[in-house]
Image (cartoon, rainbow, N blue to C red; front, top):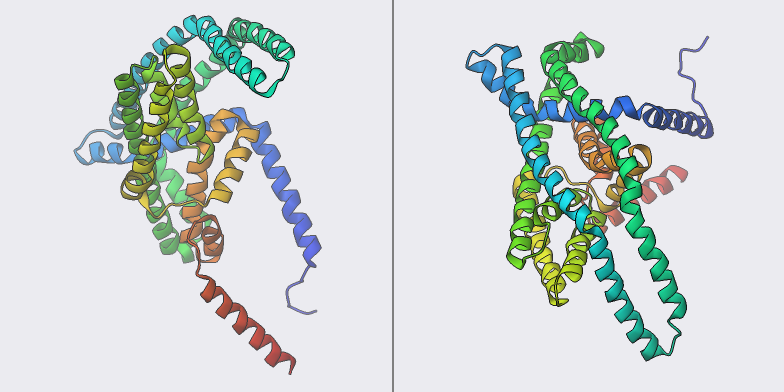
Length: 373
């Protein structure tokens, strides 16, 4: 009997791969109620780990250190949440008025367009009237859905601190499990990869939070300076949407522009918002991200958009916000494992020069011709 390994045809390997990928995605979708809180807990645990380790080094009991870290983080989240809830309540109370103002603006625009292009505006006005009624009723109809979602959210919010506490507490056990999983022969290599990856992930996620806080502060200050209502809510939402590449930035600027159009007497305020938000984007892309977030973790535009759409399809809005950090973590792991480095390179945005590619293809073609001859 030959000891050589069995070589399967490509179509069999491809079939096995796609079947496995389909099963994996199905598990992610079906078990999202379990996986989403767990993923959030892992991310929070990674962020809180340096603080916990610092408290342990100054001789505070590990359990007490974890509790202190959780209490501090929960206090910050609750403070920000209280501000956002108060602004959201004000926005919901003003929603019918905003719809009326938007309708008036649309009527004026349509009257001008219909007069300029000689188009009958009757059907358009009828559609706007129907849409206006739907928008006003939407806020009241959404209350029931919001209460149901709030109930689910409360359960998730209560279980995330428990998961986070247990992950931080059992961190030595988890690390030892990883070492044993890959055997003693690979112990030093696995420990090195785990340590490096953990450090880079902590720096990346911490930088991401700092970037979000800075962008939120700049946007809130801008909206306050222009006298735009709901400045805190729009600024924080804009900073969070900024985490979603390309699409998020467009939505982030569209929201305050719409509020400016509906609440201000002139459209110039919307133009001011657009200009200043563009300047903030330039500062974020050219200064904050390279210096604070970390230049080592860059995902190219293609995979950024794909993973955001896939995250939304799998897990909804939480999936959109988790998709980029999770893809960055996957890229970091790929970059530290020799056999997976090509995949990490594919996810990144480092473009090889065309001259280098041409020389590589020429070399391959030459070698192929020599073999044939």
